[in-house]
Length: 265
Image (cartoon, rainbow, N blue to C red; front, top):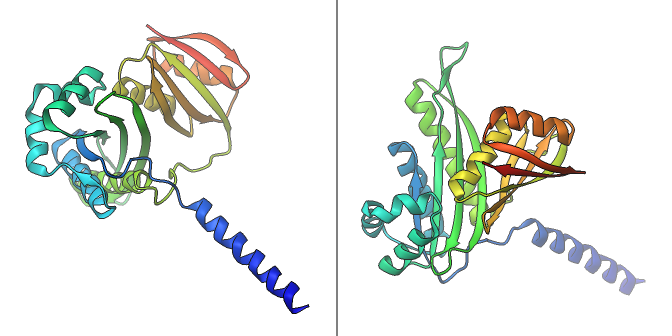
C-alpha cells in the first residue's frame, strides 16, 4: 500500500513538473550568437525600447552589440533599409559589423487622447522580428501592445512604449508566450503576397486590427509571402470585406474555410 502511495505521489509530482516545463517557453533566439538591436519610431520611444531589449538580452545571457557599435550601425545607410526588411542590407550589415542576428523593431505610438479625468491615454504597439545576418532567414516575429495613462501626452506615450517593449522582451526571452488576449472569435490564417519587407508585413497586421480583428500577429514572412493569424468576430468573408475597405492595395484571391489568400498590388 505504501509503495502504491509513493508511486501515486511521484506521478503527481511528475505531472506538475511536466506542466511547469510546458508553460515555460523556449527562447526563439539562439544562444552564443551576437545580436544587434535596431528600433525605429519616435526618438525617445525607440531609444527606450532598444534599451529595454538590450538589457533583457544581456540579463538573459545573450551577447548583444554594445551602444557604441550600435550607433555606428544606425548611422550607416544600410540600417534604414535593414529596418524595412531588405535582405541585402541585412547581409551587408552583418558582414561589416560582425553580428550574427539582427533584431529589428518598430515602435508605433499614435497621438494620446485626453480622457474624462483630464489625463491622457496612450496606446503603443511594438512589432519586432529577428533574422540571421548570414542568410536573412527569419527566426522570430512578434507584436505586443500596451495602454498607459499619464498627466501629459508625453508621459502617457513614453509609459506605453516602455510597457509594450518590456512585454515583447519577455516573449523574446521565452519568459512567457504572447500577451495577446484570447478573444471570443474565430481564428483565421491569411496569406498575402507579394510582401517585400517585414515593415509591409507588420503594416498588414495593423490593418487587420483596424479592420476589426481582436488580435493579429505575423507568423512568418518567407519568399515574398506573409502569413498572418487574426481573430475576428465574424465570417471570413466579413473579415475580407472589412480588410479590403481599410487596404485598397489588397485584393481577394480565395477564401477556403478559415484560410484567406490575398494579393497585394
